[in-house]
Length: 364
Ligand SMILES: Cc1ncc(COP(=O)(O)O)c(C=O)c1O
Image (cartoon, rainbow, N blue to C red; front, side, top):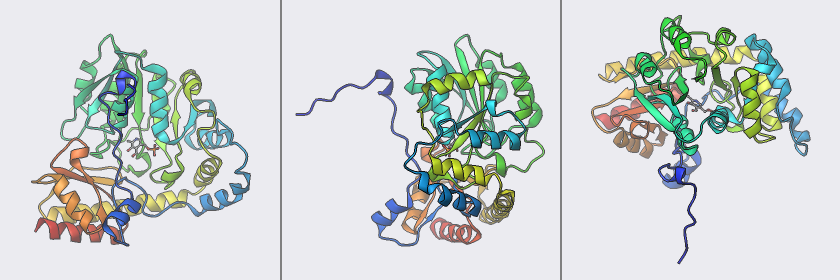
């Protein structure tokens, strides 16, 4: 008989993260060779060729540890974003920055207000630290900032906003977010996750970096995993006051990002043409999918990102399984908080067409 050694009590009600099904796993399970993955909001156009060159040039340094704070990347970002390098921390994906924030700031019983539903890592990381997630339902897929404000108590330590929100893709109106940022007391950390920032093309989207000085509690999260196409390298960043970064660094792994990722990210920032191309293609793909879905009588949340959450009249899990058999991986809404939905990443035109074709077959 084996004895189970008890882990920390905080972990009792936490399950391991269920990521979008990897291509290799589906190939193994179904014996299919051609797989289309539209499950994890990755970039169907790959990544910048400048990044490839930079990685090849860096490869021979692999035996040497990287610089722990990735100063070349922080400097490059600071120039690009018109901020200071002291305001930037580089993470092993923005996932890591979320974890560093809860590790440094959340203790037992601290409350963290967040929308319901949103990116699940906020809630999990709060629970790991023994904190209490305070979930405020979305209204029509959009953050309910009034209710989030009303949820503030003496125990509130952090508020998380996801803009555009994953999985709905919605954004918050500029004036509403601006007013919210002004109202939130300065002793509460206000995290704004902008993982899909580069895809947004809407006048109502607030540029948050200029507010960093006026709102020292503001933390902005961005990533190289989405439009820059570097998801597997694991590199993202946070923009915030140096006094917050000082705390995060205490709990960060010394060499949290690797040499290839740092080199690729620096080079990617040189390639505006690639980013623009991907954003344009994404917009075209989104319009194509929306048009086809509307013709099929299906509704979806108004997405500003590189994915669409589609409303169905049946469990999303059934559609997920049906599509999987045809070699198309998407996300079932039951894993994302909305049972009768699916979330599909916007792929290349060919992938989008195959997805629509397969969806038609299943729904008919
Ligand atoms: C809203 C949001 N934040 C953060 C992440 C994490 O991204 P990464 O850790 O790859 O930077 C994701 C990934 O899907 C996301 O959707």
